[in-house]
Length: 225
Image 1: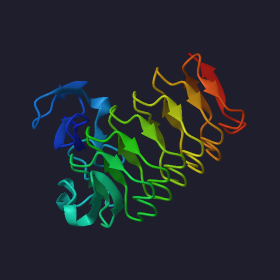
Image 2 (image 1 turned 90 degrees about the horizontal axis):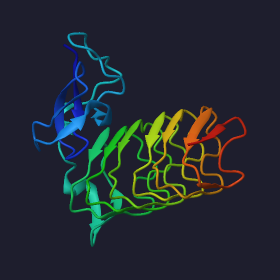
Image 3 (image 1 turned 45 degrees about the vertical axis):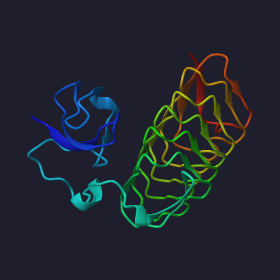
């Protein structure tokens, strides 16, 4: 049986996932989810009983919700993250992530955002060069310009269903990005949204989406679906 720690995609709790199953119930919130939607605590799930590589391991003390002392919050807006943990689980008292909130957070590898969040500000996660995974809820309706600029370790990204526009420069310089999933409601991809994403060879974009001429690198094949 292959097991691994993961974040529940519905409540953000750290749970144990049976990788031999396609779906299961969260042991915390009790709701069903597909295993493919879970955010794994390790970059590459490792079948038990094989040991987890030390380069992929996280301290168990980091599995808990990020303490408020690490967060500068003003009227529901996260203005600045002050911690140094490898991954962050934000509390549901946060409604918005402000501009530059995680700018150059050097240790950040995994970020789990609660369903209470509706907006991610410009350059919010810019230059988080170790960031490998994010859990962003469908309640988010705006991701600001340059929000993930320079996240060079990010290899895949699912844009929330609430997003209709991929803003300019959002993924600028995400050189390891290979896979992007777009929501069916997407209407527009702005200039330089994926500039410098040299590993992004092909994307499937909903038919009817307006795409700026410079939105993707020249080598990216765009398939309309």
